[in-house]
Length: 277
Image (tube, rainbow, N blue to C red; front, side):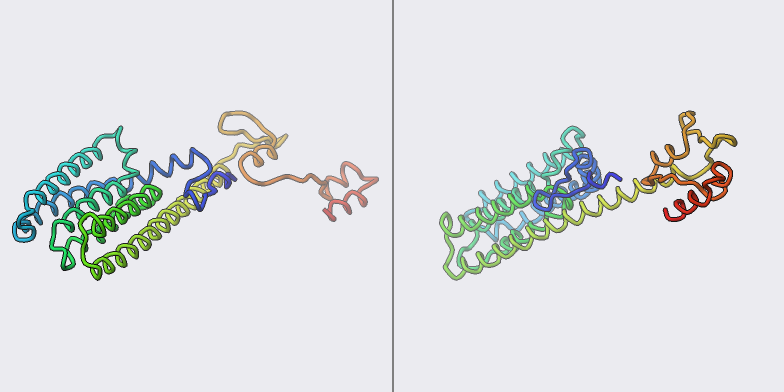
């Protein structure tokens, strides 16, 4: 019963029923709220700690590097604060995407400021930030996909044209960046699809349990007419009650004893038809 409400579009990763979709989003955002907060706290911490190495890493570009650090720390503080504001929590659906875009732009700037003749350690950080897809695992795949494509495109544009590196280094950067973008996009898709499918199965199981419970326990029944009393105090035919609370469909016939009592002259014929049914 109600299975159609949990039909999932494999392309858009969305339930066809708006009520089910809202319930899934609310549950997922509540479950991932702690991860969202941890992400921004960790970002603030790492951005501040690694700033101690800027003087030896960037030299003449240290002012620009520090400005980039201040920007990402302030943005992270704002987004961390949003997780404590109930009316802004629906925006957390895009938390993973915001994390990838923000830290991706930050790492891209630092790679451009670093020595362009060798691979920058901040390129490793750029690949690592794609793990942000698991911050809000199970929701926001569309935003995550956009953020990964934008981040990868912005980085390759920067190292290819705006702050060009050597051809060999550009090939290495392009190979790893493209591979990471494809791999993490696929991982984000699978993670959300599996999460939604598990939610649908769990909800259907809970619905089945509730229906079974409705037919369990003490059920008042009339000793004479066999009507049953529902939880609202109304007396109903037992067939109607069971049909309303289960998938059972009644098909009426006549048992041998009743056929002998009600239709003695046709008992054999009636009993034969009943047995055939």
